[in-house]
Length: 407
Ligand SMILES: Nc1nc2c(ncn2[C@@H]2O[C@H](COP(=O)(O)OP(=O)(O)OP(=O)(O)O)[C@@H](O)[C@H]2O)c(=O)[nH]1
Ligand SMILES: [Mg+2]
Image 1 (cartoon, protein in one colour):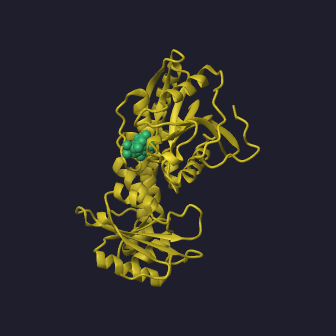
Image 2 (cartoon, helix red, strand yellow; image 1 turned 120 degrees about the horizontal axis):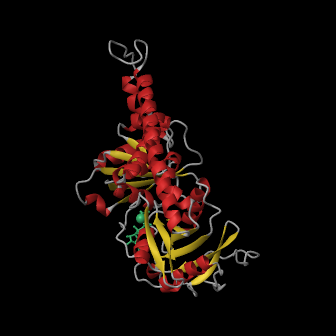
Image 3 (cartoon, protein in one colour; image 1 turned 90 degrees about the horizontal axis):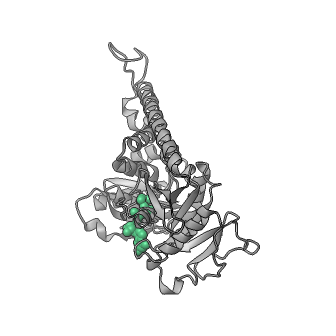
């Protein structure tokens, strides 16, 4: 097994598992803070998309190589490794430019893809509703339109002739690009129609119930599990990334204030969510944008929870939902070791200069669910929540000068 000075190679147990296509995962550490040295998230994405991970390769570089992203020696090592494992594809944790992807494929003689395509693949497999399918299709077409040269380079030749669009002189690429452009336009029109229908439904809902709450958060944080625990619904919850793609809305009765609010479960966010996908899912995410209150669900048992919070905040800004009041829900309390258990289940945490109320709970065991309901009830009656300003040993410390509540 080749191993360079900066190369960590490990063999995954599950590579010997079932008969799924084998892939090699590659991560290039360019010194960014959120670099996932274990490539765990990429592995989870690959598993969710239906691959088995044969090996993981992590390399260090000061800057990406413009042509190959990594060095040609490293590319040779990965190629040899892929051959040794019988891997069918190489998956990069970073987004590759179309040229880098094409060059790497030529160099290694194997399909090379990045996390963006992986996310698109998962979305394509998961989409259930008409709207979800249209949104994924739009994002896929947009991604494809920038990669045409790669996928169709062998067809780059004159292709005029009787019955062909564009006539003599139009290259296959131009033709493909035009067909994709047409498909993008058609998909957009269909989506606009669905969006109008959704807006009507939302207006009807708004007339019925004034207060709307949306669950948002990093993928796999436990939004659907919490949704099910709160409204006793059967939303699909699974240890997969992007288990939920479509928004589900239910009425939740809050006995504490004797009224119902509408609660929506939404699609999860992830680092490097392809821009086109955020735009394509604008209709689904609209639910979060129009909410009166966001329940930002965090997997408190995940060591990378702080980065995940930041990523969610970034997407919320992108969709224009960053001004909506938030309650932080630190879920999976049952999975946190005793030594990291917070001193108080209710406190607040400073995010981007704002102190947000925070509750630690477990959607699985139901612990502290009543506290969350009480927080919600307080919000709705607009009396303002009363929660302790406790110093907990769990989280990142609240910087000095930010101890005031943002109520
Ligand atoms: N230990 C523990 N696991 C939980 C808890 N809540 C959810 N999970 C698990 O976390 C995984 C993800 O849960 P989901 O509810 O599907 O998460 P989600 O945020 O809806 O995920 P996406 O729809 O994929 O974005 C599942 O395996 C759940 O069983 C909890 O309170 N404790
Ligand atoms: Mg979900």
